Structures are given as structure tokens and as C-alpha cells.
Length: 278
Image (cartoon, rainbow, N blue to C red; front, side, top):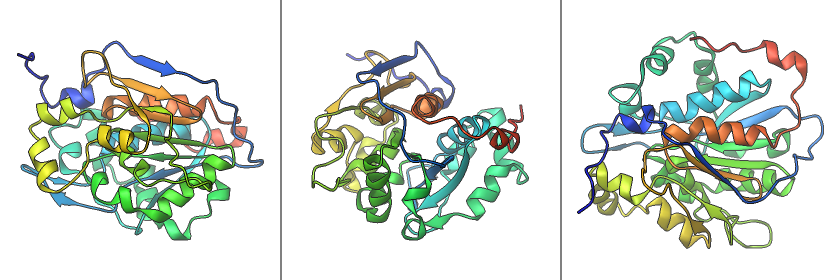
């Protein structure tokens, strides 16, 4: 019989024995003159057993801080130009610092969210990379978010980087390159695991709403599923040829840092625009 699952709040707060699986050493992006990274969130929302889901705050916040601290400008995008936060990610599952930044409407990420753009109005050529945040709502719209998927394909085929964390991996369902193949075909990837869905008692909700698990998304795209050997709540990422995927909210920072390794240096004057508040 399986061991008892860790409590829910460990999804954000538990970072144990970080494991990074890097199969290929990727070349930096080749776009010239760019110092921008696109952050993508779900437009969907839905009632879960005990809260409404949307984008997961920590999975947006932590990469935002990593990218802006490194000197990159960021924009926030969704398929329709709207977004709602996952209630649990700013409540019981949020640590003190994350919750404080949510409540502080002067924190600069809120201005980015207020200026969120629909994907069809975004020029992919302006960005070195795109990162997809999770939240269970991403399972609803990301598989059919054709404009977001086109942005990701164009950035990748221009030599850029595509990152996704947790349920943000749902974007890879139907994400096709110009040759018609799925971007994950033959590549390793990870995401929120079926074991984690079961431990949170959410697998039944997923099935009721005809939503795929992230393992089903990856394997259905022709990719190879990988996960942490023992703890689905531990930090775990994979970088396979400029596609960086993370397993859970605890992996969001590691995904962003791995993506930064693949970026050209940001202009020095970009580094003055953001300071992380403790």
C-alpha cells in the first residue's frame, strides 16, 4: 500500500532534493535585440471541490521575479486577454511572502496583469522565450489555445525557449511546429503527476470534466514522461532541446532559472526596473 501523501501546502512550500534532468545543451536564442519574455496564463476558470481554479499565483509570480531580476522585461498574455487567479494559490496554499505580494496591488506584476493581452494581438518576434504557468484551469483551455500555441511554435522555431510548469504542460496538447509534428515529439518532459492528482483527491474531478492528466498530454504528444522518483511534490525539471518543463509549483523558479541559462544577456539598463521585495 502506498505511503500517505504529503499535505496540500507542501506543493508550494516543499522543495526537497532538487533534481534537474538536462539531456541536451541548448544554444542561446538567436533573435537579435530582444530582451523580453512572455508569461502566459489560462483564461479559464472552473469550480473545483473546494475552490475556484484559474492560474496558480506562485507559478506566475516566481518566474516573473526571476526574469525581471535578471534584467528582462515581461508581458502577460492569455488566449482571450482575460485571467482569474486560482483561489487556493492566494489562500491556504500561499506562503506569507507570496500572499503579501498578491495583496499589495502596488507590486508591479499587478500592472502587468492589468495590461494582459489576448494572444492574437501578440507579435512572437518580440520575445526570446515564453513561459506557461499552471493551475488546474489550464487543463481546460490550453489544449485548444491555438493563438498561444502558434506563439510558442514561432518562438521555438526562431531559436527561442519554451517553458511550462505544473498544469501549464497542457499547452503541449496540439502544439504543432511548422512541419506538422508536435513540439514534444520524441522529447522528455514532466508535469503535475497523476500521483499528485490522486493524493489531492482531484483525479475524479479531472475525469468528470474530461480533462487529461499531464502524463496523458505528454505521452499523447509523442513525448516521454518523467517524474521525481519518490515525491511528486519535490522540485523537478527537465530541459530537452530548449523545452523546459517543471513538475509542480515548487518547480516554477527552477524552470525560470533554467530558461535564463538559454537567454542572451539582458541589457544592463533593464536590471534597474525591478527589485524583489522580501
